[in-house]
Amino acid sequence: MRKLIFLLAAFLPIGFCAGADGEPVQSIVKIGYHTQSDDLNGADIDTTGFVGSFERVTSSDSFLSYYGMLALVETEASANGVSLDLGDFESIGFGLKYNFMNSGIEDYSEGLDKGMFYARLGWERAKFTISSLALQIAANNGVPIASTSITESGILLGLGYEKLFEQFGVYAEMMRHSEDTFDDDSLNFGVFFKF
Picture 1 (cartoon, one colour):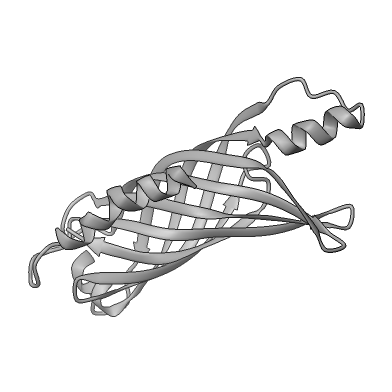
Picture 2 (cartoon, rainbow, N blue to C red):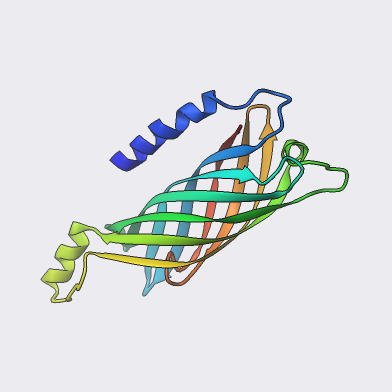
């Protein structure tokens, strides 16, 4: 939770430094909420938390961007009204994003004003740290745990939509993660600020 508060304190001032109206958009910073759900032997597994990214268009008349992304999320299992904190994921990623232009749109800034769909292709590295409670339960039940953390890498695919309103915009994105990282599809949604 302290990491999340620190990241919000670091990212929120970005909104006050956003670019002026009329200037072409070169970069956007996204701040959002990550959520995914799964089912394992009758238990619901929910992973939720913060996701942030910095995206920069390759040129003002291009629809191709490169990005860097950071996610800090928590995983919880629940069954029969009982919840258990399984641990935390810390993930970093980078790659390319391509916005699909609608007819009549000539540049990236105009596309953001009217709203655009986009596709993302990238790489991510996720570190899962097992919670102390989960470790204690495993030890009490004789389940050997070789390591308290696991780090894996994999490909990330995304499909989303973003629209700009004056100084800030909104976005929603469905992501498909590698089996080696988050092992499931996720939904990210939030706001972004232009530069």
